[in-house]
Image (cartoon, rainbow, N blue to C red; front, side, top):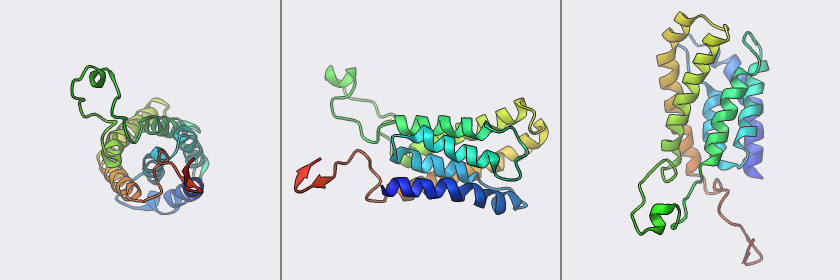
Length: 183
C-alpha cells in the first residue's frame, strides 16, 4: 500500500515540479519523471502502468508543446522493463544452474542502481530520437542538450534508485507475516 501511495504522489507531483522548476533552469536539468519511474518501477509489478500514467501526465502538463504520448510510450517501456526484472533470482534459475555450471552475473542479479543506469540511458536516447522523428524539436538543439540531460538523468536515476533500494519496505517479493504465518 505504501508503494502505491508513493507512486500515486509521484505521478501527480513529478510533472508539476518538472514543468514549474526544472524546465526553467538555464543549464537544463534532469527528467524528474523518468528518474521517478526508473526508481519506483522495480517496487511494483505494474511498472508499465506507472510509466504510462507518469508519462501521460508529463505529456499533458503545460506547456504541452510536443506530441502527446511520446513520454508515455518511453516511460511505459522503461517501467515495463524494470518491473519485469526480478529483484532476486532463485538459486536454481536457468539451464546453467541445472547443469552444475556457475551462473554469470547479469542484469538480474545486479543491485537496483546498476539496473537503473542503462534503462535511464536508453530512455533518454529514445525520447530524444522520438522528439526528432516526430518533428517536435529540431535535431541540432536536441543534440546540443543531450549530453547534459543524459548525465543529469542517469546520475539522478542511480542516486534515487539507490536511496529507494535502502528502504526496508520496498521489496514486493518479501512475504509479509500475518499472525505468525507466511502469507
